Length: 160
Image 1: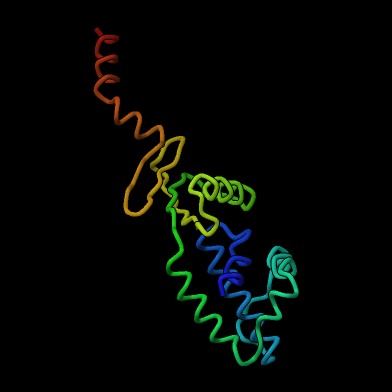
Image 2: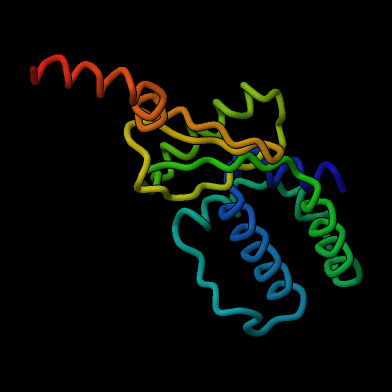
């Protein structure tokens, strides 16, 4: 089971991406085993490429008898994955998301770390992170707040 999850997480960096790929994979496997339309997910080119990137040995682990059990187990396992909430002022594109994912996995030394990207337009030039309940703001906004009194005193001296 760990090897299946590891293959899914290999190039999956965000929580949203993980959930989407799990739905996509499950839908395609159920369609392959049981036929018919299981869900209205027509894979994009990017999704199709991801599905094709999974090795044949990965797909051989699934069959009609175990597909529901495997996905149930994967869903249970996924609740224990480490999640880093990252607040950004923009929605990252796939290239940026992959770069952020690679960097954070290296920084946190965790191959299964997922990013939960949240948009916070109030931040200025930077990011804020929440890890295990601890929130840290590394944006320019936080630095300005930290130096607010010094900045105000500087303006007062200038205006005299």
